[in-house]
Image 1 (tube, rainbow, N blue to C red):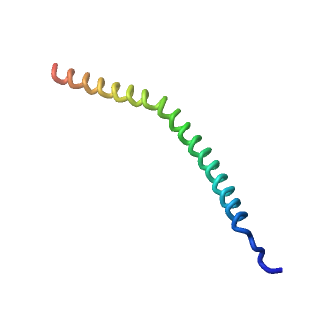
Image 2 (cartoon, one colour):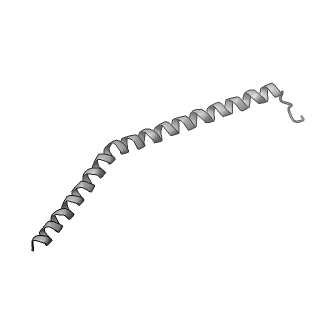
Image 3 (tube, one colour):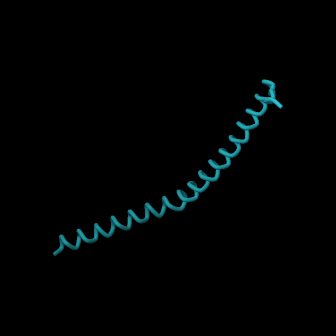
Length: 69
């Protein structure tokens, strides 16, 4: 038995199927990744801002105390 000959149409359909499956897998991975980043950003950004404000207030209080002494 020699190598099978695949028609150009069948080859194109297989390539299209492979490309479609690869696109579905990549789209699913991207949606999961971006959804995770969105959740982290939604909770992380306010916490970051709150932490920076806290640090700024502490430094301001220390400077005011040093100037009074």
